[in-house]
Length: 337
Picture: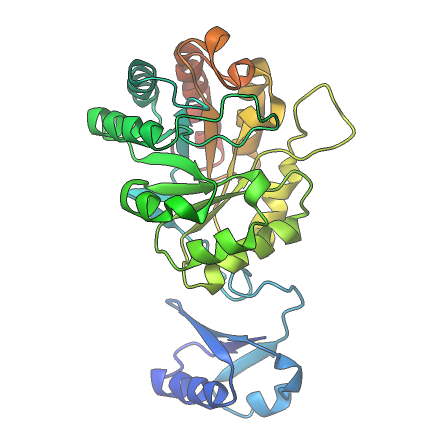
């Protein structure tokens, strides 16, 4: 349930309503804008009488929220959220591009790619230190030594780093060293991990699960938000359908739906969606055109010999070309790149 206050409502009136509801055991999420303020009521609001809440002269209207997610709901937070990742703002007018290899393979590889993507216009460096793979015999990543190499690449280029966490065992290290902690599709409903991430204040990049609905995806974000961490970015990376030509099916409509239902920033990973490097460019353009706040793109300096997902990785020169074309699309829709 939300209470919309009238423009100019005194802070004392908001405080009075908030105190009364908190006495009844509700949590209140207060959003104060330039024109009006909103009180989001979290709890079993079925026991509340809307008419009694409207008695206060400063209350404009009271509405029940039907969706099960509250803190992530746009009704509770009408303005778009902007998440600050080590000085890089995600969710504002400027589109942000995170680029790098699927997996960290060596010092030379990650530093070379980091320099290339920065030159191409990327504002964050992505790279997997821990890699969840379908087969237990596939390359699983370098682990913490891979994270050490990402930190070296960050020192060389100044790019904040994005990498995936798979368990709470390494959370302390990730909190210390990672700028944007990624939760992969397979862990979208790892609720113990989500709860632990909710206790941090590090920005979290939450990928949509392989067969998750938009509501389930946002509900997973709610777990992190409910823990007190407001720094959540959603990532659409394609879902599993009957189609097997591509690795997954990129759901562009999910970008529109997520941004209508939620105030959280939404970015798109066209590399995992397609699984084919030559599809990455058109899908990236389409994602920007429908309103994505950024992109997560795999770039490798030697994709033919990559230890992980080489088939979906762009070479540095293709990435630079794509960035040039994206600038034109961003201009048309009133965004910056």
